[in-house]
Length: 409
Image (cartoon, rainbow, N blue to C red; front, side, top):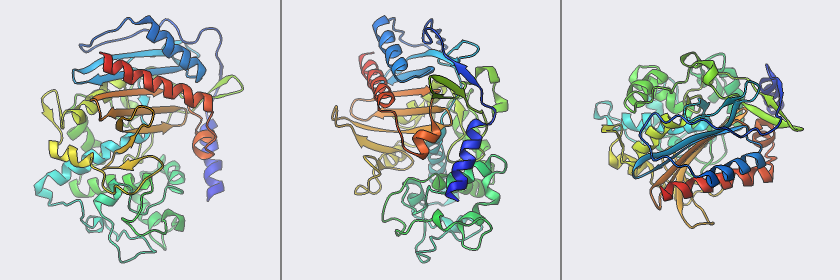
């Protein structure tokens, strides 16, 4: 199964790709659209530094947005989101946000838990709301709860779900979720489960969010994408946000790239149908409304999507002694302390073949940043963890600069 996963991943990476050589100054003459009231900066030195690190990290484009207690205070696009046609990125360019989608899934689940008419509790056995009994076959007597799924403590594995994500491009996972997770299923894989007791340890897994999205559908009797549009996107005025490519002008979507031997290789643009763990397309301005709601106790522009105490709970470490690298988990969000500045941060990242997105909040000073980029080597970075240290350094410097600017404005 592992070999098949790698083969299928590579096939999808290169289907429909084309080579585009970057010549001359890629990052120049940026155009910025500011449809909302914002504090604009003409800091040419800042722009030059961003452009320098983009070139160092080989980023064709980046779209950024900064948030503080005043709201969305600054946003801009740099570079080409379409190299071949020389289209400049703006703050309205559409990018995929990958696993940032998991926070939206967590938001939907917590809305249901807030709604007393459903009678849900974080520590309920989720099997009560599923058409099958979800249990780790190594621990058949241990219930799996909403809290475990939200905090990556369910003992579900990440190893094989990525292969199933490719299957889901053609068929939404509800039809095969039972067959994948239960022994005896047609596509069951024992590596879908880890050997630790549910609730005992942390392990980041997209499968958790796929199950949660299915639970939202089962409980509300409404398709998950429709639920999120009605209860999250529309209330937050996220008019340029969707799972469906048909909702966008393809000319406004950032082209995904990987870079090999000085060339940018164009990747395919396709929809994920595993709505819970990824698949949202949006721009930095739309996503800023979402982040602002979390930074403002669940309210954006007078509209509440969650109670303040719910936000506080989601930002509370559920299993404080369990780490995933440097990160610890709340409910749908992860948190860490940056040793370089001593500040506490929370947020989520997301990858897509040829693109990467970050949505971060500094808990120590009330600032937030969002940035999207359209160059990410899925095979090299995600499958084999062969990160380019210079590229990694450049992106970290951009992230640091964005937080510094958010604190200044």
